[in-house]
Image (cartoon, rainbow, N blue to C red; front, side, top):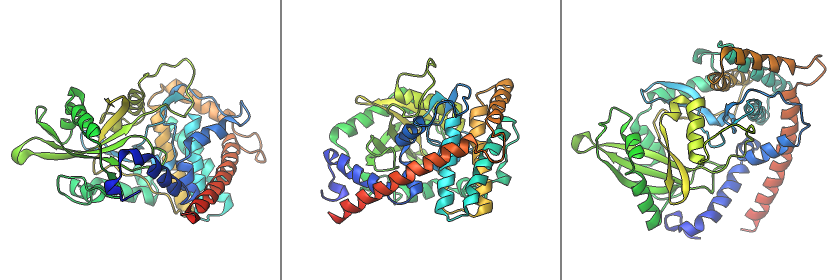
Length: 400
């Protein structure tokens, strides 16, 4: 297949398929992150009527813990918010609660924590979520150590650190290699055309006190092999030069294809027909820091959404947990999701939704909760699928 430097656009699909297989075979937690479609298939197979039916709000749709983290606003403020909205739809907020709880439970099992810890994690998820509906969720000072550390790193990060991490150099080029692949002439032309549209020029000049009429030039662009569940979709890194002379600034833009969401939507609720516009609209409701930094556009016939990557944008890593950290992480991160949902509801709706969650609590200590039943069933389905995935990967690896 040749090196990544000479990888042709026609060869990407096979290379991306192999990369996705490798990433999802690394751990059960990684498999959960990359199997959104399966998640909803298995969730749909559960007995109807067992889940609470929440109000019609924008949900993340893929609300695993890795999709939460520090996000910078256009004015420089930083907050822990949802940072990936590819799957966002107007749907049942219970789906976000389950997805988050599943990822935390899987991380707990991967950290070899006692089995009873999973039960306590699920309790903390509901407690933290409902606290957000009451407007008294944990503040950052009460966050687990892993979240506080990433928040401190986020606030202190600079463009130089972002360039070192993402580009491996500070020169105005994107180095081709394992992460970045070359583009076709048509792709380069389409990207250059995209960044001359008024909406993209405004996005490029809107951050870091740039002049509104500053010239915008595409310095370099490459296909970006990134993520897990999104592998196989168009993903470009675009390096811009903004301004001129000593005021010339650089910006790294993330251009990502949007396709139909796997997350189920509530029937009869109007959403943008264009998939990228759907993502941007959901982001505006769920993660305002990020949504105000996003624009929908087109590359050839593909719907894409674009944002500038800022040094402060990081994800929370929860690969290894202690029992105290697991409890705090469950409560705090569920609170982040609860805030994202609650900002779309009035006080009466928040109270009604919280009461609905209470009504689904088990009437006796012996009975499992709806969240426990869902997560245990999904853990079983995911782990069986993960083992089968690893078997196939092992077979492929042995075959060379």
